[in-house]
Length: 329
Image 1: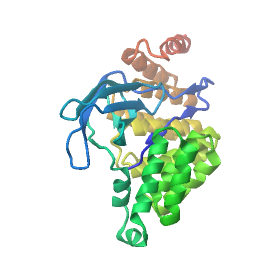
Image 2: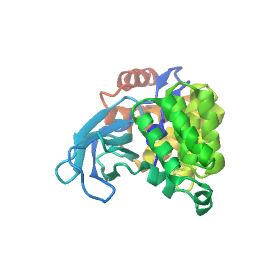
Image 3: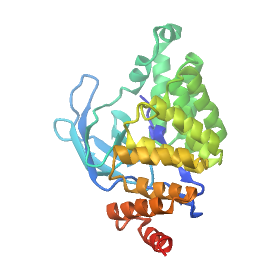
Image 4: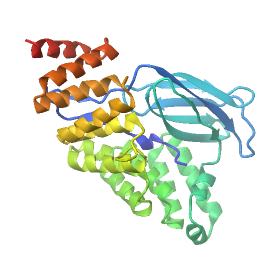
């Protein structure tokens, strides 16, 4: 478990398009979803009065919260299709966090256990790694303090604590992941990149590290590297070739390819997004942009019309109507 699970800091900026527009990748979908679940203590007993907050990971920013009832149950409604970090916290009991992706109209169950972050980190370690820990209590304490510091926004202190944990166990990939996230929060992209690459050395199958690397590369306009990292993240998370089930992940991959000016590959991703979720309005819009790039004007008009039909008041609706009018002249 990772505490500040802006692990999925999947904020992609579109560098160029067929109509020479500079835009940020928008939120996805129009229908609302629901996340609910239980917040429990170490014995599995529900905790009342816990604040549970869901924060979107892809702009525009959305923050919704709720409080657990007498049985420890919470429900957050009105979630737009996006990736979210959900955090449960109560004074004196610590916090717990998780990351999830919700689709339009979906109802998800996310259960959280307070005070279990260090234990969960230890649970992910191999028997070989566990055998290397001479002072398990010291390791868990450093990890827990680091997690708490991250949750409080004290990212330099978090880094210091996770470095202490690494001194005890250098193969703690969770520690490096959290160090990378804290460096991102502090604006230290180079240090964050080093940390995420270390995560991959320790856990080559860990998709979130590739996602974070992709975001760093995008911010530095290293678009080819961003495309490669994002493609690997999609493959590992079950959203790559041969295992494409998540339209949001596929859509994000299309935007990455647009950034890298790999138009044919971007087109394939947007087409696949639409096949998985025909109501994904902005996939239709960006599919139209790929058609404009390749000179397929009639197909561009069709895609723009689909976008307008799905989202008549969307952020690209006015310019889509203007482009249709121009293309049909």
